[in-house]
Structure formats: structure tokens, C-alpha cells
Length: 257
Ligand SMILES: [Zn+2]
Image (cartoon, rainbow, N blue to C red; front, top):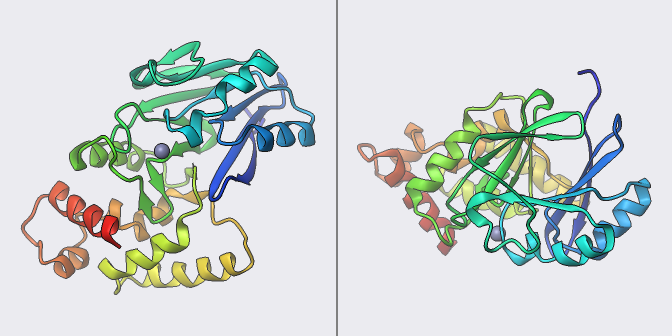
């Protein structure tokens, strides 16, 4: 298909990003999560799009809190992870792990990625090299483990790692600058990371979004994707540890950062 999926991104709440996606062929629109009803309505009006679907990544209020109001106003269909069906307000259609479904004329696949919550799901438009990763992966970071184990989160991040290096990752928060500050504490000799940190600092000085990020850049600079990296292991004194032990150590250091 030569047509591209359109993504309209807008900041909302204190540090969230809202996303509308649009299929220009069939004139179909979805909101990825519902962080802020007012901001979503504005974005719809601005583009002259009508909301057909809500696609939820997980149940947290800054992701699904606007579901019922938007559903009432637009009669849209709410799609979300099977594992979160009891916690996502207004859910109409559940998606199972690795299930493919249609969004207009595009194919999208949902992947169950527990860790941040037990029900979290990410959505991959493989032939578009676009994915919506909610609070599973952030630029140079990953979601806090509210409900899952380090092993689960590592498995979830490995799913994302298996995609094309060209994949553009749309995460739900602008945490990039503070994530970079943490990343250099465990991976301070990484030249790609140091270079990226100065690029990010320059962007944020002008309040320019650092999202989306690209998977190949994350592989080089995100410590949570680099638990087998020798320099990080040396820094942590964990040369012989398993990947999940290294990951757990990085995550717990970040929690205290
Ligand atoms: Zn969350």
C-alpha cells in the first residue's frame, strides 16, 4: 500500500502525548488512549476528523480516563487489551496477544506487554514502521513496574526489539530529558548516548518534542534495552549476571534517581 497512516500528535496534561491516527483512504480516525478529552476534541476539530475508535494501551487514568465521555459524544468503538477488559472503561472489542486487526485499510497487531501494568498492550503497524508503545518504552527509558516483574518487562521490551530498526516508536510521555540524565549514570562512556543527550537538551530548551523515537537509536542509547552491554555491566559490577538481573538493577536505580 502506498498510502501512509497519518499521525497527529499533541501534548496534553503535564507531560503526556495524545495521538490521533487517520486513514485518508477510508476517512477513519482513532485516538490512541484518551489522556485529555478537551485536547482530543480540539485535535479532531483542527483536522476535521470524526472519531471512530479509541485504541487503549492500558487502564491508567491518563490513558483511558476520557473513554466514556468521548464514546458518549461520538459513538466510537473502544478497542483494548483482552487482559485489561475489566479495567478499561467502555471497552467494546478485546485484542489478544499477537492478534492482527484492521484499522481502516491498514493492518495493526496488538502485543501484550506486561510490566508497567499486567494488561498493557502495544500496537504495531508493521508495514508502516510505526508503533504506539504507551508506557512500556520511553525514549531512553521504560515504564515503571507498577504491576509486573522485571522478567515480564524484559520479555515485553524484547518484543519491541524484534521489530525493524526503522520502526518509529510513539510513547505516551515526554520523559526523554530526565531519562537521558539517568542513562548517563549507568552508561556514561556511550558516545551515542552523550551525543543524543546534548541533542535532546537542545530540543527541550525550545520545548520541541523528542517523540517519536526510532528503534535503532533506542538500541544504542536506552539502558533498559542494553542489559547485555559490557560497559553497563562493568559499571554495575554485574559481569556474570543474567539479563533480567541487570535489567532489574537498572530499573531499581532509576526508581531511586
Ligand atoms: Zn501508565
